[in-house]
Amino acid sequence: MFRSLFALLRRDLTLALRRPQDALTVVGFFVVVVSLFPLGIGPDPEFLRSLAPGVLWVAALLAVMLSLERLFSDDYRDGTLEQMLLVPEPLGLLVLTKTFAHWLITGLPLVLISPLLAVQLNLRVDEIVMLMFALLLGTPILSLIGSIGAALTLGLRGGGVLIALLILPLYVPPLILGAGAVDAVMHGASAQAHLSLLGAMMVFALFATPWATAAAVRIMLD
Amino acid sequence: MSERSIQWFRFTAPANFYDLAGRLIPWFAALTIALFAVGLYLGLVVAPPDYQQGDSYRIMYIHVPTAWMGMFLYVLMAVYAAIGLIWRIKMAEIMAKAIAPTGALMTFFALWTGALWGRPTWGVYWVWDARLTSMLILLFLYLGYMALHAAIDDRQRASNASAVLAMVGVVNVPIIYFSVQWWNTLHQGASITVTDAPTMATIMFVTLLIMTLAAWMYSIAVVLARARIEVLERERKATWVRERLETES
Image 1: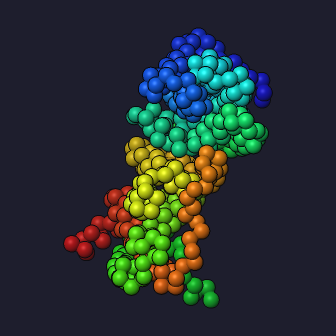
Image 2: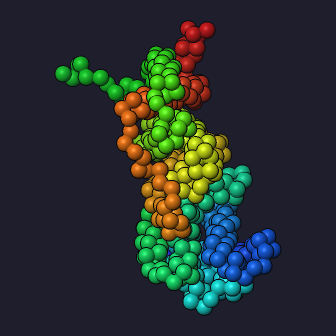
Image 3: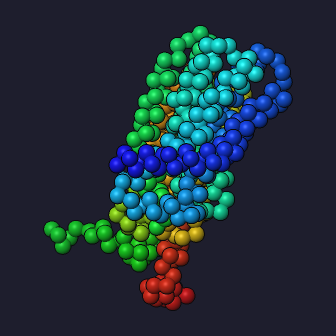
């Protein structure tokens, strides 16, 4: 079973590497959005610093959301997804594997590029470390919850805009906890509570969302 | 014993539901009007002004019932959606769809009246209070449910897909509520508390109760009416629809 899941993971990653512009567009979006904020709210370093956790998290959230449409749509269009329903492996695991690949392609680059943007917004080193750590815990949650929205909007007109309405309200808890963790470090408090809850949320999402996503895929391919 | 018990499953058949709802709606509508009339009279005329807030507290008589209904209807919608998805009961799907607009309306009213009350009391229309924020997100959840339902052309698929969304939403509502509450206490000292109001006078409590009942009756009447139309639309090719429509016209 793990061999076939591994094969699926490798296939998704290979496909993404053959078309790197898809993943790079998401990173580009993240960078551009964050760079626009100082232009909108003024260059005062202290003010930017206090806004930085929220700005970075909201931008990461939007970047992940924009990339969600690609999670299933290519496989849906060429019929691969339909074949996956026939495979003996449980659909939930297949979906989880695809979501993991999606995170490796979009979530991880966001985590890796975030220090650069954090420096732009005058965050200190310990805050940057915390930001990366929070994003590392938080972006998988975004991909997992997002996979439900991606599955529910398969083959719909204007699916991309609809995903925003379905998924963004559900992104509120990771946003609060992720930005809160950086905020706590900024104010000299411990971020342990934030990180624990974020971790708990990731474990819960890891177990619960593949079921919902698999159910949604079955419904939309019915 | 078994002969006398009501056969509830009878009303999962669309034709029986259509007849029953048609007979019940006028009663619920009449109760709505009567309870609103009594409740508003008590609330606006009889109940004394609050010693702190003066007359502005009277918005509460609309605000609290609509907020309760907004939250409760979301759970009810998710329950119906789950029943429809799991046991494939068509009427449950229809009820879930029919509840959504009323729930969204109630949530919107709660937010609106809350803003109108906030202006004289707090000096601003909107604060990022935990309750306000989670009600706003609840409204977004309703809108997402309705948007997804409307975006899918196939009725069966629309019901199933939005049922999944409603169930995901209902799992998330408590998580959202607690995280927002936590965020709120972290960011600002609890300057405003809505919770510890002074103990309520009996007349105020009775009025609130009547207004809550009125909101209930309104929701039931409107949801049943909406479900009735949806039944007609879905079953438009069935013979019972033709029979009913011929006798009615």
